[in-house]
Length: 320
Image (cartoon, rainbow, N blue to C red):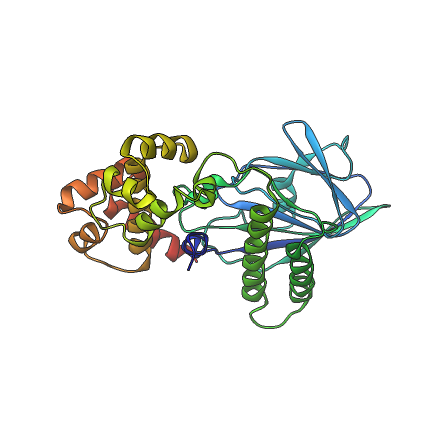
């Protein structure tokens, strides 16, 4: 398993396909920021995505994902007047989105006249989006064009057809199947980004692509509980300690040990989500001899103690 495979698996995607919209005439929605990652699939017609005043045309077959969950407008044309989408949801009796909650996909007709656009909207949710290095390395807008000559585009087209058929069906488990198909769309979009980006921004993805830094990252990911030092990691990278530390900072954007601590806490959070592991065993598994020092590091990184974090996960499970 590669580093990217490992981190994709650690996302623990839990996607919801929220609605299939049939939009006619002059329409526009203002969508609030979310803790998940909204996505829109254009099935037919066209739409415009507007963020901070800049509009981008979306054509049939295009898919756009907003990994950081930023607020955005979805429009019939760049000058369309918007209404808050939450108001439309309330009128359709669609409950507000919450992480971990299951939703049945609804069909949402809106407007009248021509032209008509049909699209599917949903939300990608993640176990803990704050600390996953992949999410932090993705751009704020992840756009896959249907007419781009890349394998991901044809794969997205095939999965989209399956997704639309599932959304329109009334078979048992349709919402669950639709969510799993949406998971595949997210992974395909990430693949497309990795293979099409001319230059990667500073961060984890650039480190994975760097021949010298990548082996050190792999060591930290594969064995987070080991007592790694900058000197040991530099030897793995085949560099002097000072050059390794400098290059790691320049490429990743943080120090080697700072990154190691963040990865350890991410792994600890994942294990807390998996079951009731005892805190001393958890601390040891991520390189801490003392439960107290581990708990302090976890709270600095995650904003709450391991016990509070575990309780918050239980609250989410009760909401499902």
